[in-house]
Image 1 (cartoon, rainbow, N blue to C red):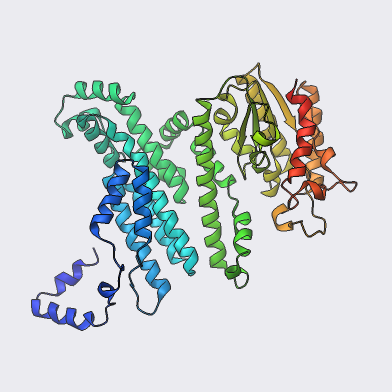
Image 2 (image 1 turned 180 degrees about the vertical axis):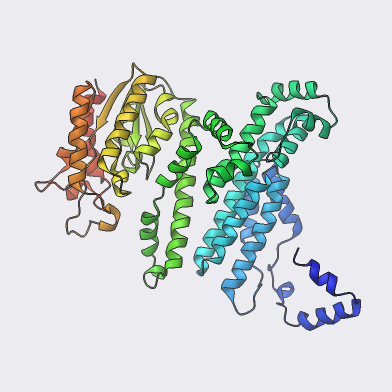
Length: 496
């Protein structure tokens, strides 16, 4: 600890008093500023609401905490003061999170991420946004950890032991010894209450922490396998794929493919404070924030799909794709059909391949309409790779669900014409030439395999091959008229 040398060097109490008097005159008068500090009781009530999974009180105490004026922790420098306040909050939250059952590596990784991010930002409004995200992420981790506390005391103790020691060699005997229980008895009640064996739970915790390291660090797969306590990378990869459905390498690639940072930067640049003098450091910061947000949004979307699949009715129509699909308002455009929208903004062909179960296999749908690939082009992927991935999506679907009816839509056109509506930054490096090449090859392949191919593209284009102005909002996404036209095109296939 950095404080240790101070105590080692200061032996005289009078000297300590002298140092305190010397510096106390320079301290901020926060104690005399109304609402500069909230009470410890409020903080404890907020923490208790999280532990009790009490949503109403979480919101109530969040509002109360946010109403307090932040303490002046750096006189004359409001930005540094705000940074110090956020870092203090981060430190407190990380300790509360660990007490609530969040693993140390998860809690400290999250804290380190936000502290580093705070130090790279010098705008008050952005810092306030980061502070809000900080609280939300820690609350989410604590709420997720609370599910462990529905078990009996011995099982809770075993879970706590595993969460604290998952990165070391843990055996049933070592866990049982730590809580003075018979190994066989602990093994039996653990399986009865959690539905998992102790080994399965240990591996689940290891992989959960490995996923956090993939998200928040640049560690290699080998480094992460060692960090979470696996004896070999080969065994780590085997367990990871069993639990997550894809290998560590595929998971890492999935995270990389969801980097929509350029879109995020464009939105930020529209704000007055970033119109000019955006430094390279700020660009990097925005990229990191954009990536973090997109990954979090993606994970929440996939989790939502999984939950809704559990209550979906058989015979629905699954729409699978990216933001163009996500923006399809089926309840307004097609109220007479049972539509399962499985679109995620920013997604790619690799992304769909990583979520086949949540988006297709487990939906109980009788038909699936697939439209994906434009973001692959936006990310610089080669047309042949995109074609191969789309074919693989269809192959896996046919193999898993031989009776489902598959419809492949062409990739929609884009527009870069000179017009007040068109935003060339949003359209990016996509070109209608590449789109046409992909569509032509896919149409030929689908015909050979007797799979329905729907040429939407040609019916959305103007005489010059661009997406019609009235059908788009900015050159890439569809307007209300654009979606109406798509409905007109798809309707005969929906009725088959």
